[in-house]
Amino acid sequence: MNTYPVSEIFKSLQGEGFNIGREVVFIRLAGCNLACEWCDTDHTAASVLDEAEICQRVARFDCRSVVLTGGEPSLHDLTSLSHALRRSGVKWIGMETNGTKSLKPFRGMIDYITVSPKKGVPLDDSVWDMADELRVVNDGLSVLDFDQYVGCCARYRYISVLSFPDGGDNLFETIKLLSAVNERNTASWYLNQQIHKALNLR
Image (cartoon, rainbow, N blue to C red):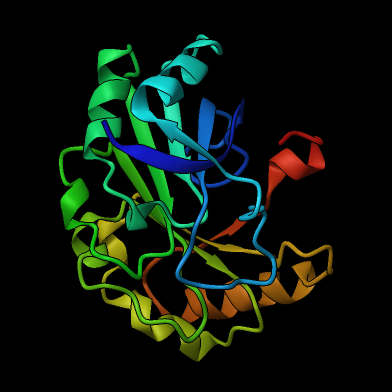
């Protein structure tokens, strides 16, 4: 039976992106291959749980949707965990990833994949074929930074720019950036704010 480093498991509403407002249980896995200064995961507070223990904790919330997040969930073999979650009654599984690792192992396993690329970090080629959503953090981005995504945007159900989530106020700059990006390209990008934080939800 596989084990996983779990930072926390909690129920909330999805506060951003295409599935905003959806009631989900977040399974936050520890460990990441990047070191983003705004990361909201405490990597030092992980418990090692097997899939049975994870499913038991998820079942307490009486919710049929889960999101595997991190950290970086693609670092882990999620096959047995996803099968266990399905057997326990979970109907929908989402994943939030930085897109630096191949997503091919998750084909047919994950219902909805959100990729949040990081500035200057290349994406794995599988992102273009498998990601359902692209969620870009405005960390001093320019219009030219979006050129790498433009050719593949038609694949996504939802593409957005997130104003920088560190307590700083770059909302005005993000709106101007969105306007310039949308004028330059045929793909429509949307402003993506973290509504769960505005509502004081986890």
